[in-house]
Image 1 (tube, helix red, strand yellow):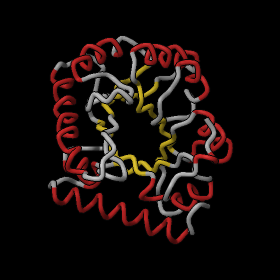
Image 2 (cartoon, helix red, strand yellow):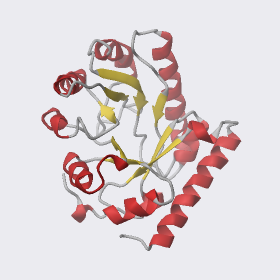
Image 3 (cartoon, helix red, strand yellow):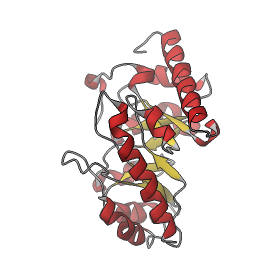
Length: 239
């Protein structure tokens, strides 16, 4: 375990309170916001400590790390893939995750559809949106989003449930408010296009530095790692 268990639990409860407070400020029901604990690079012991507190959903960035942790915990955990996903690795997690947040190309969605068909299943996905148009980030642009959603909707084994973004890294969470507003507005525009089979119920945005602002602007999933687990230890990482 990276942090002492009591520190980990204290951090976790603090994040829960902060989400609840942000919901109150925005006149939202806290039950509308899922806390996704980002456990990448952190050990099984940390995950199990939070499971004892009722946390079930954990976000991972690396396929090999999901597989390694799955060997220990299986589907007692709601595993969610939030990192950049290469097409040649889709087959290794198709039957292990409940949702893939990071669908950043139509070709990736097509590969997910192909692998899901082999398992006679369907996979929930989110489209990743590069809302701030950062060159270092993956994802569709706002302008591409509706056309991409229409293409993804053609794949029978892929269910598009919403959109996701990683806002710019900043010390001032208010700096990301316009991006979160833009994501909410984009989700509404896609929803208004009435694309058969496409839902816009999930809005995955907000991390340790800015999740309260994201909640105020409509996030339904916040991805929190450092505020719960402390600093990441990339030497422990399995890509």
